[in-house]
Image (cartoon, rainbow, N blue to C red):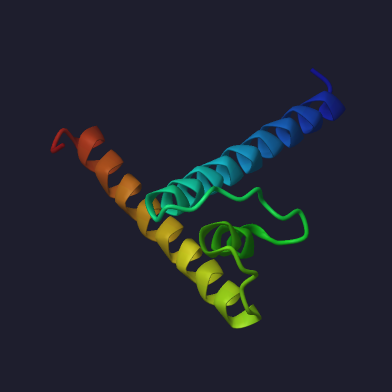
Length: 97
């Protein structure tokens, strides 16, 4: 495999990851709206990930501060989850899990 092919394969993998992440947020927001008796909303292509998540849950475009707070919350959740997964993996590898 050439370097160009490897780069293209990595880029395809990243695009797949982005689509999966966006899909999870869309499903979570749709579920939240349905549970409150509202129809799900399609993502707004002009909004970023955090802003879209808030928009699809509430039905209104978030303010810049709301978007920033959600962005930070999502980052913190990812960091904590990564730490938990590493901790669990270490315990499994050491035979403690």
